[in-house]
Image (cartoon, rainbow, N blue to C red; front, top):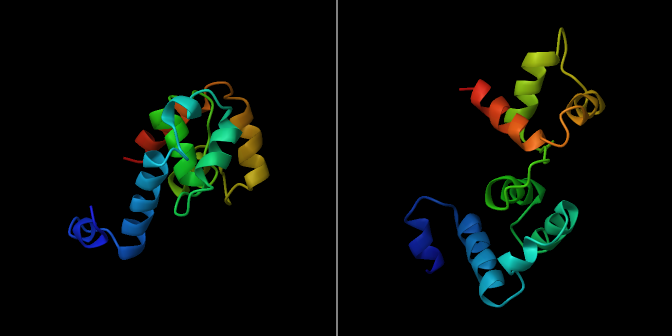
Length: 122
């Protein structure tokens, strides 16, 4: 699809270009899903973020929802930060170090905790 065709669906021109970049990376072999499945979480993040338009958050969502990795927590997800603060923050927002300490206890099932935290916001 062209950028203009993608724009009809409501995405910005930048996002349309990023979608095309990602599709091209799969088509030209820079990204191969069967190879990604064999990499560590950090290796997947490194490979995916090498494609223009894919950031760490997107790579983490790919790990959770596409590769089914059980132990991913996205510190860049505003919803997760809000949910953890609702549960554990008493009078002021928790620091990233405090959240890291809390979520470490959920390992090796942090991805499942993410899903429950997102649901708690609904």
